[in-house]
Image (cartoon, rainbow, N blue to C red):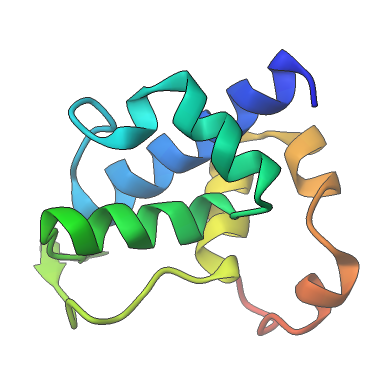
Length: 111
């Protein structure tokens, strides 16, 4: 894997953490480059890594609403759908190419 792959992985993970938990990667294990490489080598998707971070640090998931942010079920894990949305928000065309087409086909139409 290339340094570009590491950068994209970390950008997607950071976006997921920021968007769904209003948190930053700083202070988590994902800030360490070696940990990100281990996750990539073990084929742990960014959304799965963030689910682990949220569990370890006891983060409460939030969602954007018309009135701002609202807490949601803290046990509701992030999914591939959340990751695809993060990739689209970041406009990372290369990263979306790494998502399996069969996974995309299982997503609801309105992502």
